[in-house]
Image (cartoon, rainbow, N blue to C red; front, side, top):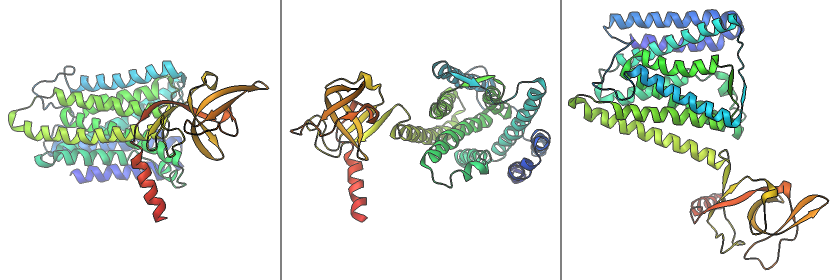
Amino acid sequence: MWYIVAAFLFIIYLILNTVLPSIGTFGTYILSPLLWILLALTTILFAQKDCLSILKFNRLRRWNIGNSPITAALLIGGFQIALLILVGFIAGFHSSPYSFTPRSMLLNFFYVSTYLLGTEISRAYLLKRNDHSRSHSTIFLIVITLFFVLIQITPNQLISLQNLNPTVILEFIGSILITSIVMNLLASYLAYMGGATASIAYMGTILAFQWFCPVLPNAHWTIVSLIGTIAPTLGFMLLQDSKREPKEHKKRHHQTKHNIEAWIAVGIFGVLMIFFSFGYLGVTPTVVSSGSMSPALEVGDIVVVQKIDTTSVKPGDIIQFYKENTTILHRVIQIDTIQGNYQFITKGDANKDADISSVPATNILGKSVFIIPKLGWIQLFIKNILQSWG
């Protein structure tokens, strides 16, 4: 019967994104919750018919995080929210987009709670129903996780990628796709180990904060995405370390642990590299392609450039700046003030003379704060190959 539940989920996804938007509030707050309730009840009936316990179960002989999978899920969700609040104290807060009148809160609670019941009960059933294939438990966990990620991505989000805008694509990958994969992987693992109540505890904690907190962190989406990726990953690793199972299952789950952790590590590394490369972490890597700054900067070195207040620049600093549609890394040798505006005289260490034109403060991108020797040769090598092919 598992394929009926999967098909029902996909049908609900289609209805929610094609039919209900045209109905308006009635479709969103009445028909949508009714569909999720129907899914939850249908799934419970199928589970009873298959003699499966999907609401709550415990595969562990000992649980080191809290007293049960449910408390562990609450602790992980609380930790994720605490990080968001901490960021809010630094970046500030903004008002929630949701209404907080009694009627609106009641409707939102009905909408969110039914969505949680429908998705997490069906998630636990799909995982439990396919658990008889012991040698493929990791595959089923990942496949079911990706299935739930798919039904959470709206067609409008996919349509926005059609214009191939790099910023939009990056935001989709970072704030929607990767974050959703990691959070759903944790929810799937909690459902696999503790039943639907465990995954409801985690996902419900996050959704309750998003829907019912009157103020939310006003941080850049990259920071929110990092928290949404790192917090559940740390929680997943802690859960892996806490489990104690019978000897006959240890080898299988040990392999599962390392397989999933490897994918998570690759995902987090990829996210960090994307954010780092595009300058969303406050610094930007730049590969040195000329010898004008030798010996301080050699060809192939990677210079990490940090955005700064131009008033803090002083002679001797190496700055990156725009000049004729290109970027240059040269050293500041003199600072002049013309009609109250700073003008920076720059020079390459290997050049005999200073640069012909001065650099206005508005053209400065940042200052060199760190150098990674020779690692940029990889990029230069690939760039030269592509240019030769072109």
